[in-house]
Image (cartoon, rainbow, N blue to C red; front, side):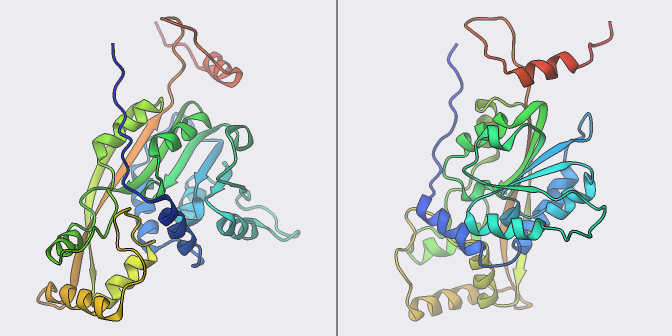
Length: 303
């Protein structure tokens, strides 16, 4: 039987994505929107059979939600995997504790995104809030999540969906301008990617938020704070003040009666479970020692 086709097309410029991460690093904390989505993600976190002893926070700095995880799982060991040197050093500095500090949440071990599965180690939960909007190859990243999870471990993630900023895209089309956003991933494609990476029983849902700003200038500043446009066919180079003025005027024309301007943000939330390796069947099966130990420890079902 032919295997399922895993969507690969991303429509995202790698250089622009790295620049967006660097732009996020200019601020001491994650954007407000990332923090709000983290709060909503942790409310959706599926019940785990046991409290995780070890959590991997993927891109904990720009993603946000670290405080929520520490509050929910205060005894868990935490590994923070950060996307670049600025975030790595900032997080390491933030995790340092004075020698007289006693008690409290255990400081996280901070690793760069280049760390492999052996360096990261096995965990029971991978948390990846608002990571995928900046990732060119989501299936490859999901495979990395799978590699650092124990059997029956869970990945919890969030990202932006295709309806995000649909009003702004329509405005750009009406002005004859290239796309203001990359192609955000459809929820059903996310499920296919999870299965292709080895996860079982993916759980996904989405919601659409409406964000409002008092002015076009405030709106544009907020969007810039979120990282900027990473679409390959975006405008190249700097825009002129005249062009920006035209954009501000066009946005202002779409203001509601109260003078505010609203944009839609579609947010997708996902969970994937790492199943036990299938024993038997066609072809050789590779099972790591850690996975075998987890299978042995698992209680047998009652007869």
